[in-house]
Length: 143
Length: 78
Image 1 (cartoon, each protein chain N blue to C red):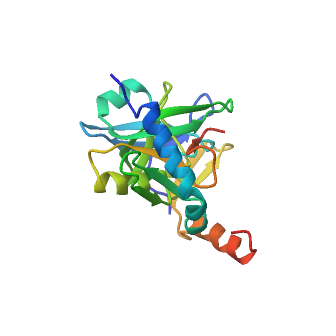
Image 2 (image 1 turned 120 degrees about the vertical axis):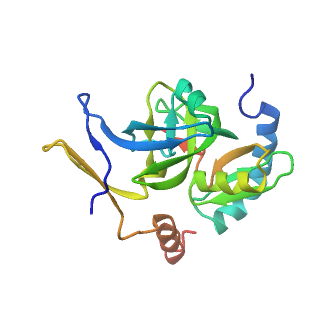
């Protein structure tokens, strides 16, 4: 059953979904770009991060798309999709709001480019892939 | 204004992580680890957000360095 979330493909062929970002000072709704190549939860431009107020956590090494490694400040914020809230790791970088796999792994994302449709639903199978991989490693003696 | 930890604090956390890594990789494969460089206390989670939340709930005033077991860096853009 698709969730009641605004989602679609924009004129630059980027998949966008509606997310409610809850900072320390205020909350705002954004049409965030889906970035399946990003392993973290959220990327925010500096101006939005300052406006919302993020919880500072510390530092994290990040491998960027050009394979260079940088140590960046790491933050935490709450992101809600269709009313369900998640604690999500956040980086302040660039000039676009991105959502990565840490947030998306809670959902089933269906993209139909021929129809220009994007739907998001709860993953009813609720497969815990990390535990599944761990179990497979143990079974195959690769742990 | 300085945001994030300084280089010496990050080096302390990396040193602690290198000591813990082998055992933690066996116990918590593919988990995220956040380490307080000064007290050496650490927290793990299936996602970085969960590990961060556990750490901040326990020590709201401290800052941590983030790692992912089995990976060179905690976060990646591919």
